[in-house]
Length: 283
Image (tube, rainbow, N blue to C red; front, side, top):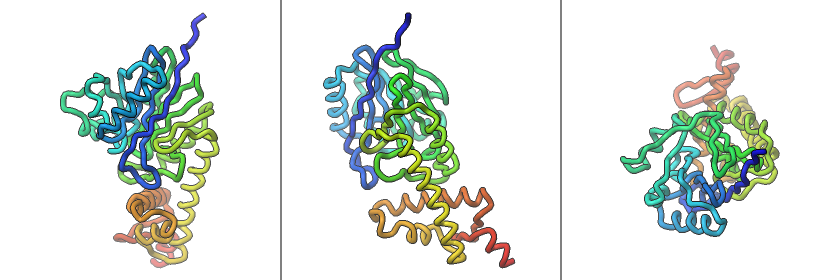
């Protein structure tokens, strides 16, 4: 009888100039003493290499032969420049390939992985999931034998991720979260923060938060008539978030507005937005 080999997923927080309240980006080492794969590489700094080499040794893992990028953002990719002698094979989703290529050396070949593709690492299956929303080509990795999901930036252990159009899409993001809920999970590895041991509760929290923001936007437009994305963001977030992340909060507001316009609930006039029902009433 053939048995799958046991593998482990090791979270390696890499210090990065990322967004508040986080100070590190998670890389993951998945595998065993026979073979391993690296997921994301943090920032281009010597400490990236030091932290990854330390984790490989401490956990008795084989040095990774490949890296999978969950998405193209600069706190997840350029640290791979510190690992040139590892001779890694590079993988990402097709829709993030162009952006990721810009962070690699010209001679590096970047290959693509498709939704529902299964790869084997250390004798165990890893299921590749295309989970767009944060970026168009965002990938998540599901390890069925361990009931572990490496979620990239779709889920954070604290707070919620930002969605910035046109690369980010709120409708796609909510669909991706609903899809993740269908997996058999015991633990979730976020892009930032510690392991999530209540994965379904955390996913539901994020969905509820996003739908609540959507309701808030419509309520404020009902009360004020017309508001810009900046105004809406100020009403919702001022006093609750660090000023350094106001810009990405506004992008997330814009992603909600794009979805609401697609739904026919909101219309845009110049830089201002209003409810479709109010606009029709004023005609």
